[in-house]
Length: 366
Image (cartoon, rainbow, N blue to C red; front, side, top):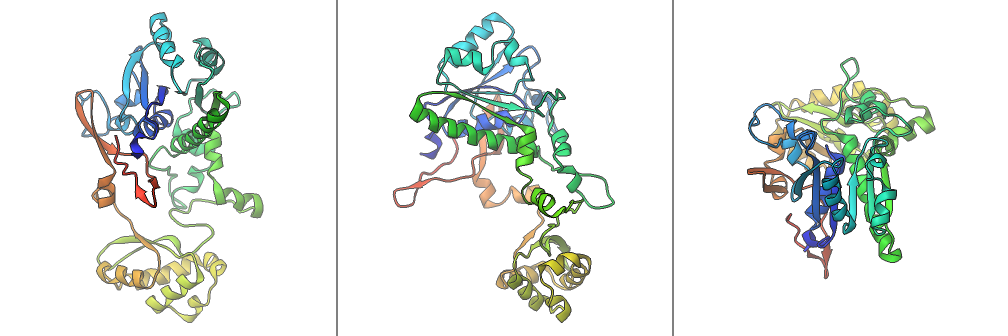
């Protein structure tokens, strides 16, 4: 079973908020025994109290906290108290992985740094999430990193206020980087028998994911501004439109064939039809306006099947309640009682593994 891939693997999670705990949940979903240690001196993970309006004030856990803390054994301890520290060190001595996100210098002061822990467990994989790095001691909250890695400068619409991604994007990117590092370390340990330290900074994780936006600048001196949902390299791609009955959608025209097929469907002018992608990017305002006028002549029930038949990529702009009511989303919903309250969330593991000529290992969560 896919959910037992890491059965027998022991993980001690000394991290809070989102990046570190989401790595812990990844291993927990796949069968590992994950012990989440929360600081009893501060009331535990700070996200326990990050509630949206409508959540019960008496519920000990916020929905935010629950999103990355399914399938874990939660214990409260104070790493500065001898009795608690001895207990944690005993757990770490038999652990495979420790996940931490200490402030700079904190791990060394309490003996929870890699050098100290590797002496009691040479096979330990020490996985550390760091903030801005290079001596920058500011608290590394996600919005700070979205600002300082350029994402906010590119998000939102020109002339309007800045926007950020509606999830903690940099935390999630760092978590994926850390998962990859841990998996590589596990493979290495399988041949060498030795543990190691895996580190990722939120700053570098954000930078590593700039992809074409970075190369557009490094190779062409193209400085991106706020473009909303639009793509700097392709048009019409990410541009949004509205149907006669008020349904909002985006196009993702990535090839010249798709553009020609869209022109046929909308009966656009020969001038527009003859534009190549670079010309479409340069004349985006005119192009989008022409498409928008034609799209408003169609109801969604009429238009969307036509786009499918023409093989023109589109996507409806759905609200979250619509998204989570889909059959695919319902298959990903997790349920678990946490501290006396039934919690529901989405599993973080999206991949599937097959063997024996394509037989599904049937992962459905723990």
